[in-house]
Image (cartoon, rainbow, N blue to C red):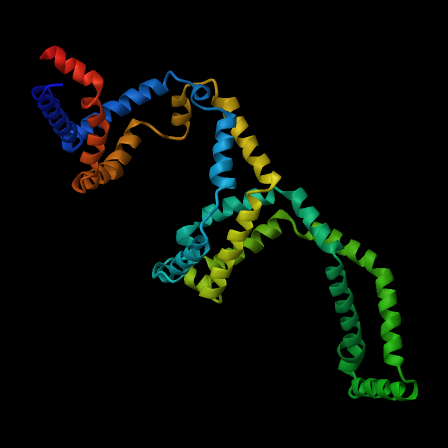
Length: 344
């Protein structure tokens, strides 16, 4: 290539760079983006989701970016710091619970929860059958009977001195027959243990009958009324910065483990597979419309975020360097030299 042709190539390169940079700012950039968004949405009305991607591609993306990606060790600390800032934000002192969740919304959640009668009955049965609960009931009944015998029955309250005499008699009997208290307690608890299944069964039946929808609704809403005007700061009393950060760390460690479980993958795969069953053979635009994404929304986001970022990149010189990296190889290529030689 002659010097004249080389100079022409460089001049063309400079003119092309200036043209591209001029088109990437202000009104020209907005016009360009709008035209491209219109074109893309036109293609989205014709190209199906299955043609662009597939279940395997999406599952692969999720495995790489959600399941297998090594997350930085600083994430828990950063998340804890952010949670602490939220906890101590001034808005916690001025925002009441009712400003976040209205009474109507709380009532709606409650009504839906009341529909889960089978789950409620199963929860009651499982609680009743738990050994800790049965031990609690056994101890409560035992202490109640003992207190009644020596302190709270009608006779000891009505006849002066009877309660003291009963306690005196108990002490004297224990002196005369050491271990009498322990024997009584053991035998009584043995009887109580034998009777406990029946007590628990009757208690369970009582709860199933007593915990009606109306009773639960009134009880829960009474609690809600007592809380709805309290600030978020008041509701989180006792939760300090340290405890909050520990909860964040525990949640983070749970997520690291949970994301690798077959259960998590099975749930994700079920969602992705169903999505493609619904939209795989339909234009991408159908899915975009379902989730509320249209051209106006995309343009609003581009103008609000992409254009300011492009402006910064242009001011920093990155945009010009990018354009040069893209154009220079062509103007220095054999194809360009051949064209310039023909022109010469």
